[in-house]
Image 1 (cartoon, rainbow, N blue to C red):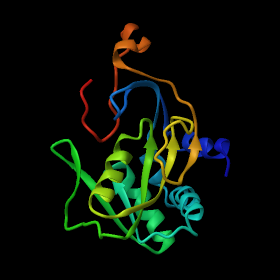
Image 2: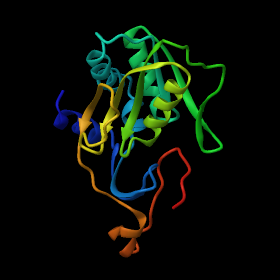
Image 3: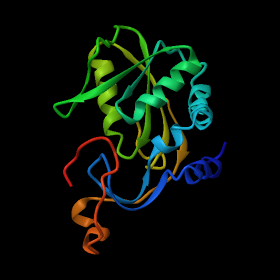
Image 4: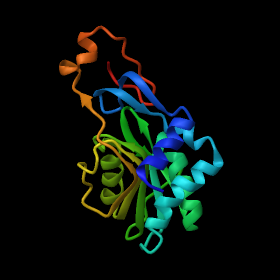
Length: 192
């Protein structure tokens, strides 16, 4: 599938939102990709996550790890298709951490999966968790790359949809200057 076909799935699922949004990164944007609205459909989930799994099928991977909440469904489906275990990191006191008995095994190889990347903050946090515990990051796979391949993780990376979507620092946001109310549709709490 190409960018246009995947974008059509987002539009058909009403997952490409237009307005004034506060992103997890703290930046503002006029567009928001609500991947959960796409991934709620098993067939779309299988197709889109299958592109990530297919890209990494010849890569040495022991475990798939994702940041909660958005990356969990992606990581689980990619792991299923690769026949691997899936774990996730979640926020505790604003920091991603492993809980629920999940652990990083020294020397094992990990594929990090996420739904949307704007600045890559959550992915970088997960990479640090893996490395700081002796694991090896084999790659990063994600659905939407809002940076149009500008964010680099210094490991093999793959996204199913690459777009350059404008985002603004809150101080420079033209939508704020127009007094358009800002909406925070994501799962992570950030200051507006």
